[in-house]
Length: 310
Ligand SMILES: *[C@@H]1O[C@H](CO)[C@@H](O)[C@H](O)[C@H]1NC(C)=O
Image (cartoon, rainbow, N blue to C red; front, side):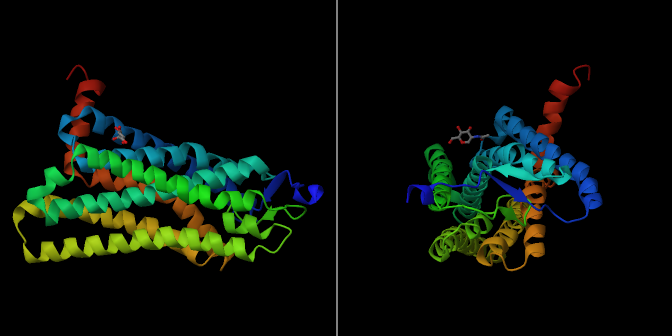
């Protein structure tokens, strides 16, 4: 029994993106550049939000935290994935694998609830503008961020103990670019049907319930906008389109990976790349380049710090 409980697998082997080493060598610089740009873009957002009194609003408070989450993802979770592209032996230690799983699910869970909070913020701003300041006070904003952290921890912490204690005794090859929880579970030497159901139920529940709340709040917002089209709301509308774009790009791949796990490995890999490398860079792009307030705040910052002789 003692022996049975002991994991004999000390590392996992990842098969990577494709069997073509050329393609992976070509993708390596591309993904590295995107990853560095993500970190810098998010850092710029955080600095701008902190140093611009104008942006001291609930929306930017939440956006700042969203950027911190994306920055953490891009600096701790994806680099290992990107480096593995060019390694001949793409291995990851047992502990490293579970750290990666923990981080991806923690940050994914936090990001989902933050996106819901931002949707709620837009809903209050557009549908209850007169009560905005009282509803979205500082305390509520901080609670929303804390709730998102708590949900991420709960989401990640509830499923990993099930998997990390499974007996892994032999097969250790993952046809993936990262430690994908459903795939790792399948490598255990016992029937893991129940554990797989727990995983799909957990990830499915959090993503579907967040998605439903988002759908409802954005529907209410769109209905409200349609009924009272006034010029003063165009700013709110442009912010809204940015939010909806981010939400679709975030949830599309996520639902694909977890609601239909292991359906098709190449589709799965494509979505994994999209989700971990492409989506995080879209937040800074969508929220800064499409946002006049943010752009002018950055220009001001630039004239203060970047061009002192101007
Ligand atoms: C994120 O939220 C915390 C409160 O939970 C706050 O103190 C912090 O300033 C926020 N970060 C940004 C970058 O807005």
